[in-house]
Length: 250
Image (cartoon, rainbow, N blue to C red; front, side, top):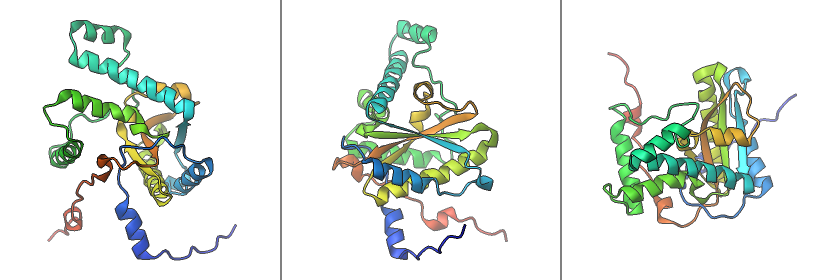
């Protein structure tokens, strides 16, 4: 089967698209039209993969299914917070029931490598400054973390699974799909936020979808139309190109 060569895209238009994309953390409840959603996902899976194995699967939740998964994730988050912030009885309850303890397929890092920690801290401080949350205000920080599991109000969530047998190469391929999905959504006026937090608890997602045994939940994406909330104006700094390029040995 032959394919016609793609028409060149204006470089300035491409740069404007990629450089204006950002994480959205507050969404309107308006549902995404089915044709638009399918177009975004179809674009996403055109990304290249290791020997064209496409070692990923996508699970899409909208409507009642989205609400059910979000409610269960919030319940587990609340149980975990009660154990973390509460007393001995709260911790004992979680230890016995296991409800609230992470059951994800991958460990979400709690401590970043020392050389990456400054960027993480700067991003967190910048976000909290926009939200007006003081670092010492633990309840407000907890509420903002909970917003992850509320999907920031987005009407749709996309969960990304990777094939365990291809290890890091499946994760690499999923990253290509994820970036393509984010750009495809942005090109159609949608906002998105890729969230590692949505993989802390894999149970509610596995219960909602027929996930093959060899696939592992990597992350989730909240997807929808952005609001004008101040948080959506947050733009963390990117390192300059020269800071990312490795110098040749002399």
